[in-house]
Structure formats: structure tokens, C-alpha cells
Image (cartoon, rainbow, N blue to C red; front, side, top):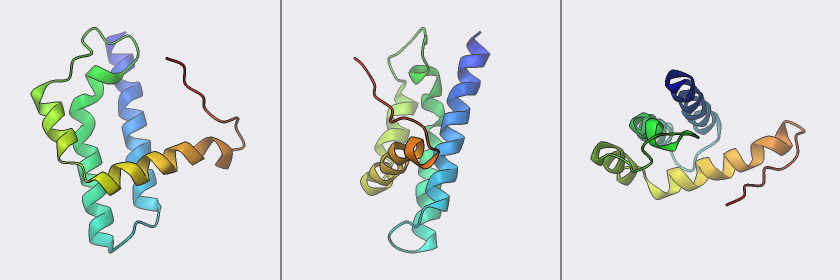
Amino acid sequence: MKSTNFSKANLIIFVTIALIVMVQFKGSQAQANECATQLGNLNVCAPFVVPGAANTSPSQECCAALSSVNHDCMCNTLRVANRLPSSCNLPALHCGN
């Protein structure tokens, strides 16, 4: 079951990376590629964020990867991810506590 959760996390990260590459990022293609690389480095955080994870405290490696992600890169990625449901004709995503 652990590998299934990890696979779901990898899929989420892959989709996020693909979206940021496809979205027109402010600035040059080099900045978009850098953002995609920074987001890809967050794979080390997958074991801590999947539902049902045994350990939800991120490792130092995860925290380092997260701290290296550019603020605009992260915010633009979240904006794109937030628009996905409506773009796919799905109901908006509402998360509980």
C-alpha cells in the first residue's frame, strides 16, 4: 500500500510539473525550465504528503527542496492547479480541515 501512495504522489508532482511547463510563465523559457526543475526536486517530499503517510514530518532534504522553490514559481503552479477542475468541466475542489 505504501508504494500505491507514493505512486499517487509522483503522479501529482508530474502533473504539476507538466502544467507549469505548459503554462506561459512570466519571463523566459529558462525561468520556466528552472521552475519545473525546482518543482521536480520536491519529489523527496512525496512520502510526507500522501494521504495516510506514516510520517508527516518532512525530512531535512524535503525542507531544503521546498526552500529552494522560487515564490512566484510555487504561486503560479498553485494558481494553475486551482483552475484545473473548471478547465476539465469538473466541480471546484473544496478541501476540509
